Length: 474
Ligand SMILES: Cc1ncc(COP(=O)(O)O)c(C=O)c1O
Image (cartoon, rainbow, N blue to C red; front, side, top):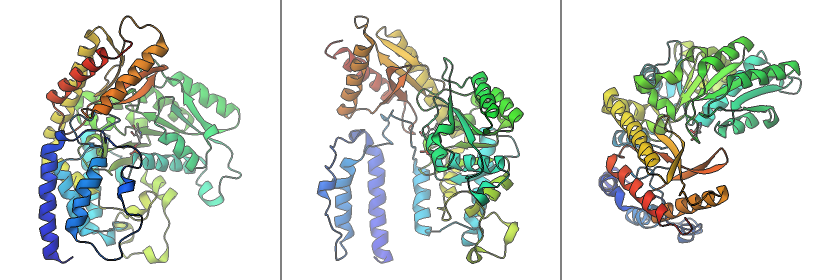
C-alpha cells in the first residue's frame, strides 16, 4: 500500500470511526451472537495473494462489528469500564503510525521522557505524596506481579533472583476475600504458592479487617514463615470495598511487610479531592497501581504503577546484555528494567493527549458526574419498594437485586435475578454483570463511560424495573 492509498483509506476509516461514535446507541450493547458464529464466517486458511483494503474493511464492518460488545456504549454498565475517548484514539493512531518500540531511552527518547513527565502529572493529580515514581505497565495484573516480585526479593535480601526458591523458606502474601483474582494468579506466577496466600475476612463494608490481618501475620511468623506482601484494594471488583490503608500500613510497617495498593478502578476517583479519604495512610505504601485505561478515558492498555523505591524495582528486574548497553548509562530512565517485558509500546502519548485535552477540570466533572448518577440511582432503587441495594455506591458502582415482597425463598430470589440479568442482556439495550454479596446473587451497576449521561441511566432503570416486574414467578 503506498502512502496515497493509505491516506485515502485512513480518511475513510476516520469517517467510519466518527459515524460509529455518533451512532453507537443503535448497536446492541452486548454482542448478540452464539459461540462459533463469527469463526464460521472466517476462512480457515490465509489468502495467498493480497486483498484490496475495500474488501478487508467490508468484512470488518459486516463480520467483525456485529460480533463485538460495545464497551463505549453509554448503556454499558457491566464489569468496570475500559474507557476510550476521541483524544485517546487520535493519540493511538499516531502511536501506531510511529510504530516505535520504546524499550530503552535511546530507541525513543521522547517516549521515555514523556512517560516520566505524565507519570509525575498523574502522581500530582491523584494526590500521591512526593517520593513515588511512576512507570506505565500494560495491566494492573502485571503491576501487582511486579510488586509481589519486588516484595519477594526484598524479603529474601535479593537472594531468590540469584538462588531460586528452593531454600528460601515460605513467603506469605495477604489480601482480603474481596480482592481481585489477579492477586492469586500473581502469587502463583511468582512461585510463592497459592497455599501461602491468606484471604483476610472483610467487614460489612467489604473492607479488610486489620485485626484479622495482624493475627494472620503473627500466626505465620510463629510458624517460621516470612510475611512478604499485603495487597490492599481501593475499590474491590465485586462491591467497591475500600481497605483501610492507615491501619493496614501500620501493621505492615511493624512487621516490615511490603504494602501494595491495588486501586485499578477506583484510583481515577482520587482526582477528586473529596475522594482522597481513600488514600489516608498512603505514606505506608511501597507501591500503588491504578488503571487510566479503566475510568480515565484512556484506551487500553495503560496502567499507572508507582513505587517508592525505584532501586528495589530495578534490582528485581535489571538485566543488561551487551546488545542493550548504551552510552547514556544512568543519565536516563531505561524503562525496560521497570517491569517484565523488554519491548514497550508508546503508551504515554495517549495519556498526555487525554490529560491535556480534557484538563483536570474536565476529567473531574466527568468522574464526579458518574458518582452522582450512581448515588441518585441507588437511592431511587432503594425507594422503589421491590428492589434492594446489597452494596451501596462507594463511588460509581453499586449492587442490587430485585426482591418482590411475595418471594421469600433465597434460592428463588437468586433465580429471579439471574433471569432478570439474562433478559436485560439479551435485549441488547443495556449490559450488566453479576457477583455474589454474602451468598446472594447480586447485579452490579457501574457507571463509567465517557458518553454516559442521565438519559441512558434513567432509561436503564426504567427497563430494569419494567423487566423485573414482568418476570414470571415474581
Ligand atoms: C481491583 C482490580 N484489580 C485488578 C484488576 C485487573 O486489571 P487488569 O485487567 O488491568 O489486569 C481489576 C479488573 O477489573 C480490578 O477490578
